[in-house]
Length: 313
Image (cartoon, rainbow, N blue to C red):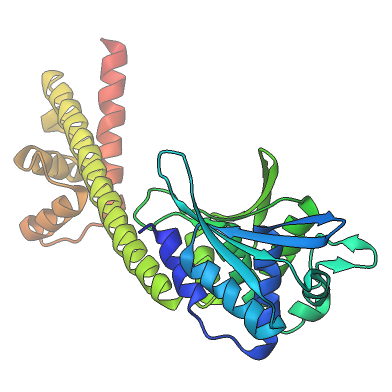
């Protein structure tokens, strides 16, 4: 079972307040159904590949509108051969669409009436319905984080985007084929969305895998940083030794200032030591403290002397 399916299954099993049922059903009907009108009247057909969501829609239609529905299962002919659950509503279509804020005297609407999502709990229910209908989310084990809800109209996508922003979820919209896709990329915002729609078990799984992976990545980055620093330290030490050898070849080593002579001898004695380690050894040998910047300054003086010799040669 994919992570998306797990999230949808959990969202579809949540208990809803009475005020939230029509909000969730509105999203499900608007994104999952087709409406046909003939001389015989209106026919509303709802399709989904998720059995749990089909049961959810069927149950809410029964509870909210006491309507009779025809349920059928169609097997796709593609490679996966998934089942498609089809709910046909032959009665009260106008009443249902009107109550769900989808159909008004001005015709079909791109988003439901504000009264359906006025409360925060109802807005969350609408987002849950939208995700169950046309949403997907990458598993936290994947290399990139991505959650999206597809809509058929830009107005509807913008409505969902605005609704998400109400819960501090700064989603963006991108056109893909014949759809408008509302999406989140930030891992913490995807976690907030899962919390928002009541997918708490999925949220715990998402956070557990994400934190473990992020910790491993941070540890690897830290390890790589330490290796890089060590390599830089070794390169600097080799250059310092080369500078000292140049002074020796020019017979200037024994004429160095006492402070420079001390650190030069120290470097030759400890060719792989870092500056911090040299500072410790300097104190142990001389009883005098020296800072890392002080040690670096003395080697800089030696470097300048060696550079002058190189130019002269």
